[in-house]
Length: 174
Image (cartoon, rainbow, N blue to C red; front, side):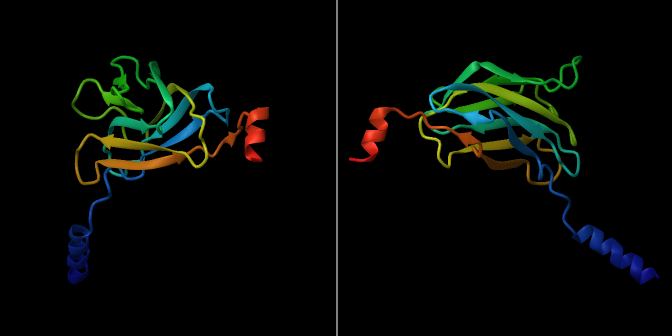
């Protein structure tokens, strides 16, 4: 019995801790149909699935070249009104196609484990859509074990509609 307890304790110490922010994700909610050249509100669901309680500090979504982002339209859904949480500063860095929702007040993160929220930004869609990924990174507050950042991509697997004209149809047959 004593050797069994010692073996369990050794295994408990030897096994790595659950990954901090592993499992956190960003998924595209809207738009459902995209027409190149049009402007849409891109809404994303942000979910913190941290197994050991690390909070999300920042959310970053990168769009491909040719997409135009409108920083003044950035929003997020607050979970707690007073004190505001999450409390994110929203901006698009100069000469960039990246929307950032960053921790405005420092300290521990803004989106606690098992919580989710929505972020959004208006974007004019480029003329080329085929196989276009949107990259995201969810950054944790750095507490506990690695990883403190999870990145992935969201593909525009929506019903893309190309606008055609007589000149584009003629060009296909030259």
